[in-house]
Image 1 (cartoon, rainbow, N blue to C red):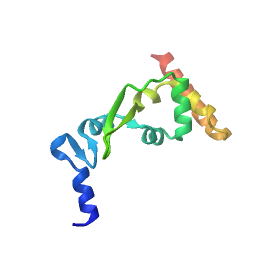
Image 2: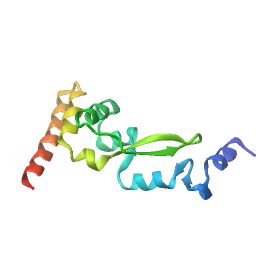
Image 3: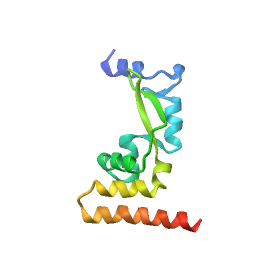
Image 4: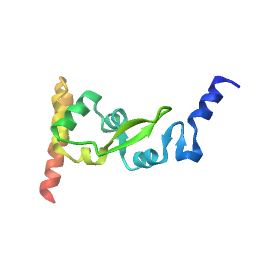
Amino acid sequence: MSWHKRRAAHYCRFDAGYESYGKSYNASCAEENGRLPLTRAAYHLGVNTVAFRVGCAAADYKVSEWHHVGKFATPVDYYDTNELSSNPEFWKGCSEAYKSKIKKEELLMKAHDISLEVVEI
């Protein structure tokens, strides 16, 4: 038996509530609903992880969900990208992490557009 097959058999626990390769069914459902781990959430929103963390701190965002992931069932925080993308303070915080004037302006425009949407409602 090759190492790859043993690894796949070890990670793949379909009968124990795991969908594939160490990711639980609940983690898969969370990802379908826009809640992602830090690196994937940052990529989804178009910022780097440093800017993402700064944005979360500026928006006073607290992680409210985590899932067991991987071989050793490591708890991983999941971030709600829908909630963060609609928060102007998040985008303002993200802009502070960048040195590039173009990227700062882009993120500040997102914050401004979201602020206008909130006022119109």
